[in-house]
Length: 295
View 1 (cartoon, rainbow, N blue to C red):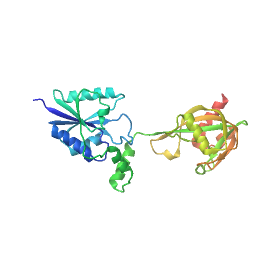
View 2 (view 1 turned 90 degrees about the vertical axis):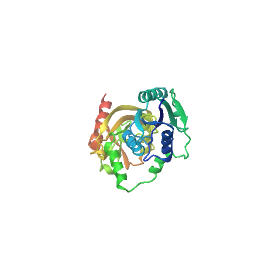
View 3 (view 1 turned 90 degrees about the horizontal axis):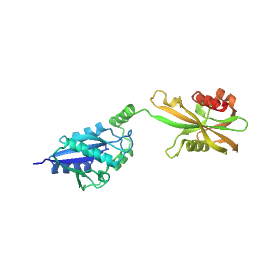
View 4 (view 1 turned 180 degrees about the vertical axis):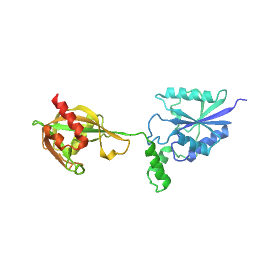
């Protein structure tokens, strides 16, 4: 007699299996002699949609249902290739068996194009991982386990590279617009900041940062890319993270320049004098600018 195998394909990106997850697995267990749980593995670093690593989710399912088999399935570029990969995995694990794939109506069935039979499971509740994660984000726990989880994530994550832009605005007198911030203890820096997710390009980010931090200034022509370099940002000393900035130059046509946002003051400084007034972490940008102009 052919053995019936139920396959549950899911992500289970939750702190604990909710009732809908449990109902799905238990339904498959009631219908089949074997149950294989296939956990999706994203190709990206952790995100808000996929915060948990595979081994965490595997342990969660195994603790609740030790009788099921669990395996991971990496995401693929196309739905067709993902379906082929899933079918190959199932064929290897369930050779000669009668296989049925189980899932809810809004599960992976919308992208699955393989040849195995599927059956839609109608859950009794409408719990979902997205709302479960959102509820966690709405409250901050004061328990040691909660703090330990945050520390674990920071200790084990991949080092970040923070992308920034800096802008050298030049005038007809050969002066550069520099900014002063109170935290720099009298030293100056170029106008700039971090890239926003809404920025369509580095040039767009440079323009946005300039006009957010300086008012009354009209520039002519494009923002010309000079180069990039790491910045020794004191805020990330002792961490694995780094700041990588991209330097641009543009030209003022007319208008006054007045500081706003997190800048205390702006001043026009002759190009030959900028290295004497720049904060240490912006000295490489000053050298880069002078080398560009010297060409």
